[in-house]
Image (cartoon, rainbow, N blue to C red; front, side, top):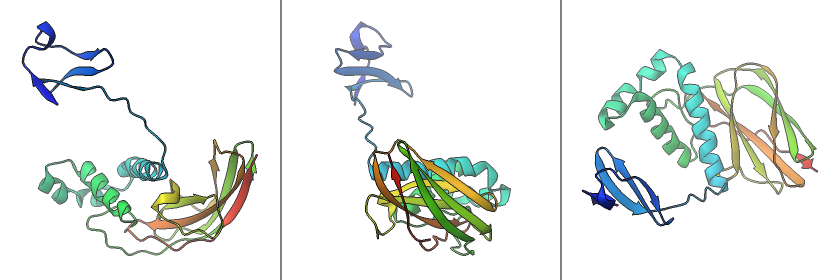
Length: 208
């Protein structure tokens, strides 16, 4: 990044010239940088990080004032908001393939729900994955994993969605925009206190 004092005959240039150089302003400082076009590929790890980020962002307002208050100290230590401290710390746990936690530090306790991964039924470019939750226990969410091959080990690299669990009963997730073929799914639950549960067992479905 290059700082500018009077770029392009003005004191406030902005925009892109010749699809090569972008001029802008950051905190009152004019600068120029090479224009970059985001490729935004949906790699497996990008999908995994976005899935966890979405889950954490949506869950924040519902975790309650006591868990939220536990993030005040780490937030003050790094001069960020409690929400940002909660997101940053839990994404770091996820990078190490650990479950997120509502509170800081993660107690890593809690009981998984009683549940079964029932079926995966395919259709035109999609597969409906069905799970039945019998008892809630300390569950916070469910991580859904997908693989093009059977007998796979669950990991961050094949996590496709983190789904909030809010009650018992049947839960159906539609995995869409699939290329025709057979896919295998597994699931693991996460507790409110940062426990990553055991694999539930594979089911398979075929998208047409």
